[in-house]
Figure 1: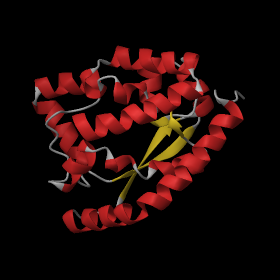
Figure 2: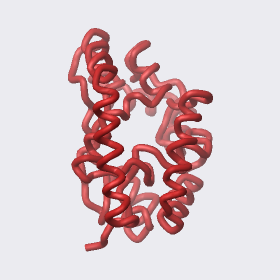
Figure 3: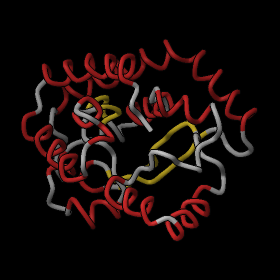
Figure 4: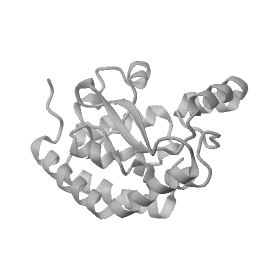
Length: 208
């Protein structure tokens, strides 16, 4: 069983940062939960299984930004729109996504506010504040491989991908950034990524 890169100091920082973030953002998170319930039928949270440290699966939390029949809508779109199918295959994202809850969902994704519940994942030890972008078992099997440095770290709420172009990057570039982070991890790098993440969210807002 591998120990997470960064060891105990990184874990202590994660717990303190996540606890402070939850306390500071509790009122905005309650407001977001209310708006989701008003804007769309279904649960407030979206829970999806992702791969974490040592290749173990964990329930990754997000505020729900998609309609409840999102999987059906995605399947229909990919079956009828070749351009959308190509984009989704290459990036696992869609710039014009018909699954997004109108207004509320778009705003949450644009500002990355849908990921705020992941601070609870950090407290539970599933994730880190900074780390590789959490991926699915399918992505590990198809793209990363089970020997990729990704599985030596806890996935992060933010990381090099978020500050290096995000959805403008290709998938191979994303995997390269994850490997670079794990192999070159330092406390200074984590602090720099956190600061730059705040700037990206406030200035560029290119999430989708």
